[in-house]
Length: 448
Image 1 (tube, rainbow, N blue to C red):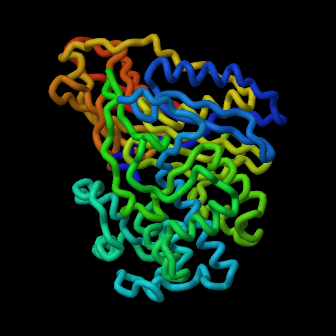
Image 2: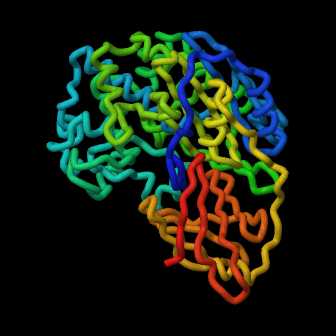
Image 3: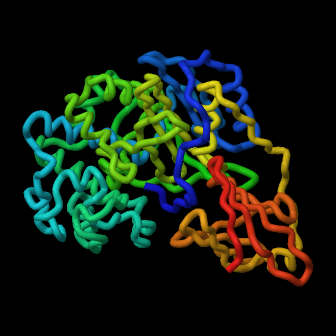
């Protein structure tokens, strides 16, 4: 549900070798989160479960900056698209109860939607329906804070253009899961939140989880923020009538660990339904994504809405669940998770170095970096351009983002964990190439 998302490489992976269950180094994890807090890199909460028991918990930053109210393990965060995992569980429960089939056509519920006779439930839950995501429409930014009725949302989704034929490919779409929430309502003659409470929350005693509403900081609910380089700035607040089953749930890391552990312990759906959920196609299963971490394999989901970012992942072989929720980030969430998992699994990990400060780079040198750069390693081109004295970078099909100079040749984009190194350039010449670093990977680009 992010308004703007930049990812050059979307992965949770480093090159490591698997080992047996390690001795937890809590002090090292504490040090990592203290470093993040001291450098305004995150306001967040994390929880780790092993074999169904909590083994680590930590909270940093503020749920309300103006009130200096600290985040705690009880602070509730909007979890964005992790809501899709909750929605998918309820869909599979309905399937287990014989009220629905994965082959059921969308036309049984919403015949007004293009290709509804060809779109099946399985297409919706695996992002292969071909229905465009309404959150990608520029108009979405104009109404996201306004309450919408079910009819208004259906009209908005019905107006989306067909992206591809059902089942032809996979493309992430929030429209799919809003429709799934409405299907749950149709089949049960109750609201999405009522079914969420009945089928999952009460069943697992998730006392800090619910459908979302207007944020109330006095009820230990976090507001969300962005960092402008000097201070945390309050973000706008999406009206929770809009995301529904695509992103309306609020929770805590502990509750998310309990939810995901219970799912894989067979407490929410049948074994056959769980197997279907983990059959990932192009990384997407049914309400679950497949995450690699070296040679380890996890299942879970990420989430982003307003200034909130979150992730929950379950490692079946290790029986480990990690949940992270944030109401403000000024670095890539993926980089934080790599740190958490590396420390937990006792793998080599170097703490980030925040001693490097921004510098002013000569305008003529910045202009020498103008140009389009291509890589033989990945199908992505990067365009560099100076705009009002700021060096901007833009990946193919993605929004432009500003680069912060750390030296004459090193530039960072902290929110996505991007580091760009420019080749040394002689005065009066154009830069011949760059190296892009992100998520533990390096990519060489040359000027076209």
